[in-house]
Each structure stands twice: as C-alpha cells, then as structure tokens.
Image (tube, rainbow, N blue to C red; front, side):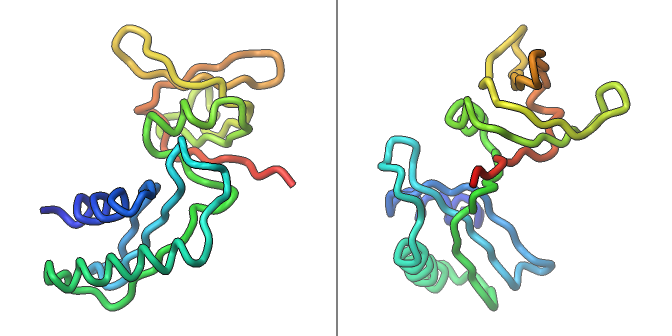
Length: 151
C-alpha cells in the first residue's frame, strides 16, 4: 500500500478528511493536514484532534515499517487549500485565490467568489465570480487554489 493511501485510510477511519500530505526530501518529515468532513459540525480542528491522528498514524507507521524522522499533523488553516473536486463544490460561495498552470490572457492569478464546479463537455470547470463577470477555468489548469480568510 502506498504511503498516501495508508494515511488517507487511517485519517478517514478516525472520522477526519485528509486535505493535503507533504513530505520533505527523502521523506524524513511527513506533514499531514486534516479537516472535519463536509457533513460534520463546523467546529474546526482542535489540538486534541491533531494529537489523536498523530498518535494513530505513529502506531500504523510502526506496524507498516514506515521510516521517517518527524510527523506533523495540523489543520489546513483559514487559508485552506482546495485540492479535490469536492472541495470546489463544498466551498462554493466563499472567496478564493487561484493560480493557473498556464496563463489565461497573460494572467495566472485570479481572485473572486467561488461559484462551484461543473462539467462541460467532459471537462470539470471551476466557476469564479470576479466583480460582475463569471470566469471559468479548467480544473486541470489550476495549479493552486486557496480560501481567502475573513476576519
């Protein structure tokens, strides 16, 4: 089983959602970002949640002989990244920043209100409301997308 699959299975088994997983060179540092599932109460991730996931992952890694030096488990933060297609549906109505892989009209960075995700001609398209105009971007062309925190 691949490391990402092992982590995702463990995190989901504890009732959390794996948002993102990062490794350092040679996989000595493992960073796991977790969130509550979409249907969970909007209470956010606590230190206790991170500790529970960290403890369980440490045990699983010991059993599976995963070699690492340090494990970090944390919440995705207020500026949560949008990774999966479901994220673009879940956070519709919120302000986001997008960075494209291939520029669109000499521009790679866009921000606006996420209108959601839809399929057009077999391609998943992210809809972003910028002022009064609706821009559409192919999901595969999005390099990075983040929520914009509201204070």
